[in-house]
Structures are given as structure tokens and as C-alpha cells.
Image (cartoon, rainbow over all chains, first blue to last red; front, side, top):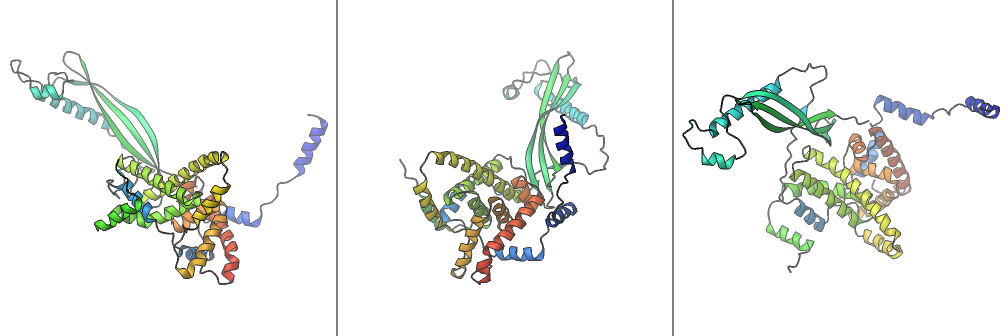
Length: 208
Length: 199
């Protein structure tokens, strides 16, 4: 660095950033204390006066257009089905949910196979079963054993922010899992059962 | 080809049917004016505001119909405010491109004449001066102040919700609101002191 540059640098170092003015300081303090969003009585009074002026109602033609847009759409005020995160500090219970799922899938598969497969070799297969489920290969019931389970994340999507009655915003994540259970029959053939599962996860959203 | 009935005819038919107002209609009558007011502030003309509001409602309804909307009815308004703003910005960009290609002098004059027939606020005849002044001063305010004021006062949104819709923090929303309110009070000051206004 040349002596000129060095001298300028020293001069600049002597300068001090201007102090915050009182108004900005008060504002930052209020933000830090979380009181900046509370209005004072004078502001509230003016706000109230302004609120006395009602927005113009929708023109009839626009109302008719909007009514035709919403026609046939159910007006539902039901809140969404949402899975909450466990509360902070709460110990996550270790439930063998995946294996319960596998067991249920095995039972379901076994039951289905039992219904589809004839009891004896002489009996004819059920026509209805053949026509309704051609893809399923009959397997001897009761001889399927779990060979593996895979619970893959298929898709995760941010669905935006929702406001619940508590006025606390939450970000909603839609997570789609694809559960795949592999079952082995007596002859060693592997059968797969796949099933998607959707979970909505609610995460407290940062608003500031 | 069948003639498409105009909207006034549709309204008349709907009224003549004499059925009780649907839940949607009640909801639209209650909340539509607030959102149209916001759309008017966000767009350049009354017609644009109506189009933007309609498009926002279409988007909401599509989401509800496809079971993709997250949240109950209380989440509709935050969604609509965000969508109206986004659509208004898109429209404004398209208009800017279009206007660069057009001679707009005559067009703008016609447009401002049209605006006079679509007041932003309801008013009794005794309050007409207040309405005119308030609308004028709101239009003169910097957009970032006006949008927060309209969402807070007439949209009855919280600072947190406004922040979410505008992509700013709730403290920034509160700052813009305060400065905007102060500026509005100042600009209405003369008329208020003379007692010309009811606010």
C-alpha cells in the first residue's frame, strides 16, 4: 500500500459514524422490546375515524361475476388436517410404526390373497377376482414373510403460511412418503406393496 | 350462436330467483369491498382492480376445489391479499411494456374520467367531501404507506399478516403504517382544521 493510501486510511479511521437520532433510537428500542407494533392512543383514535369510512360495496356486475366463479364450490370453514410437531422438550416416543405398517400390509396382502386364491386346486378361480385384479398373481396365503420395508420421501412442498385462531402464523409443509413393503412367498418370489402417505407438518413461522 | 347475457341481466335473474343468499355471497358482501379497495390501491384503474380481484378469487377457488388450499376460511383473506398484490404487480409490468408501445395521452385522460364514477368509499352526501379528500390523499401517499394503511384499517389485518403478505417484517409494516398515518393526517390537516371533514 502506498503512503498516500495509508494516510487516507488513517484519516478515514478518525471519522466516527454519526450517532442515531432519538427517534430512530426509540424505534429500535421499541422493536427490540416488541412494543413497536402497539399503537398509541392518538394513532388509535385517528385509525378509528378513518375506519368510519366504509369501502364502497362491490358493484352488482362484479358480484355476479364472482358468484359465478364460486358457484358449485363448497363453502367450508373447516380447518385443515395438520400434524403438529411435538412440543419442545417432549421426548419423541419410539414407536415401531413402520413395522406396524408392515404387519398391517402383510395381513392385508394375506387376506387379499386368501380371498383371491381358490381353496383347492380343482376349484375354478373366481371370475370377478380375475377381472377386477388381473395384476395380482395368486400366492399361497399364510406363507408370506416380510422381506423388507422402505419408507422413502417422495416429495416435500412448502404450502405457505396459515393463521390459526391463536394469531400465531405457521408454515405448512406437505410431505409425501412412499411406503414400500416387500414380501417373500414360499417359492422365494418377492411381492411388493406400495402405498403413498401424506403428512402436513406445521412449523411456527418467523414473522419478524 | 347463443347470445351471452350481460352481467346486469345475470344479476337481475339471480335476484329474481328470490333464493336466500348463499354463504359465498354473504362472505363476498362482507369481505369483497375491503379487498376491492386494496386492489384499487394496487392497480391503475377500476377495471384492473376488478379483474385482479376476480383472478385472485378464481385462484382461491381452484385451490379449494382441488383440495390444495391449506387452512380454513380464516386463511382465505391473507391468501387473497397476497395474490391480489402479486397479480397487480404482474399486470403493472405488462401495462408498462404495453404503454411503451402506445401513445397514452388520450387513453389516460379517458381513464381518469372513468375513475370518477367509482369511488373508493361509501358515503352519505354530507360526507362526500371527506370521501373525495381521503381518496385523493390516499392516492397521493407513497404506495408502500398506502398499501399498509388500507390493509390495516379497512382490511383489518394485523401487522404480522401484512408483513407476510408484503414480504416485510411486522416492525417494518408498523413503521410504514405510522409514517403513512402521520403523512395522511398532515395532508388532510388543512381541511380537518377548517372542519370540512368528518374524520
